[in-house]
Image 1 (cartoon, rainbow, N blue to C red):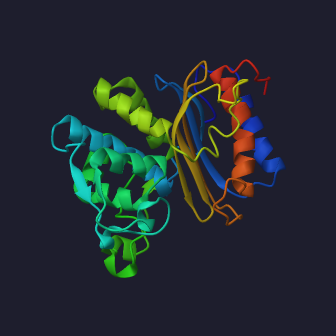
Image 2 (cartoon, helix red, strand yellow):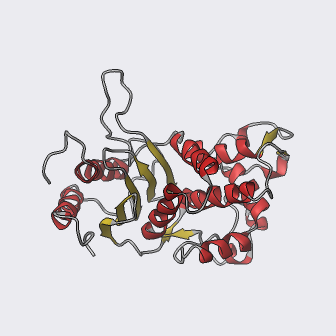
Image 3 (tube, one colour):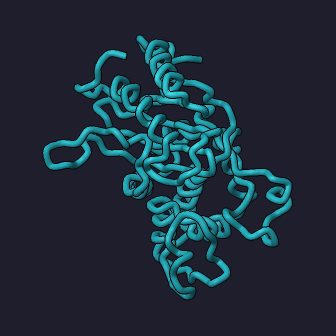
Length: 292
């Protein structure tokens, strides 16, 4: 499917996005879905294709953890102590800090999103439980998204599915569906919805969806974003809300990249971001957007 039924010019806009990638020799497979905040589909390309989730799995973890807080089963002000054995490599900062640090659950959730901390994420997975997370995903209708287990574990601590090579998985459709439910207040009350969007809005990795958002005279971006990125070798994702004049929900997934660097100037990331912004600007009603 190329675009929402009522979106004029959706096919042409998607074609321009695809042409930009092709002209740049972009090697990756892309899954893309863009909707408005009501969930009306504006653009879709490989939206149901299953990709390795990378750190986008942290979005449903955030929402479910806040549901637990809302129900009184998780006290966000309670403290959890980081044990030396909890620390895992990859994204984040907790693996560089001494064991024994006591963080509130609110801080753990914030670190999981804002700096994509894998140690914090594993604490959340341990609190929620893998089976409970997957049951919740199924109940939400997010059938293409699955949590296999904790992140970046040493071989001896991996579960059977991980030893078989299975990975956490998601789709662009699932990510945008969850974002729609979040923004609409369907999964959390007003206070916890605001907290989720505030945490997502403070994410420090803005290399795709928000990369080319124009800035005002003060140097600040003209449009807020509430997003979560995800990276593995050859995998570059970004999902979230972009508060353009017409706010957009965006799920952008890709795999098969050839630049191995985890760096903002990764060539695959730059190409993908360069193709994405004209599409988002046009769909979002940015006054500076030209016709595409």
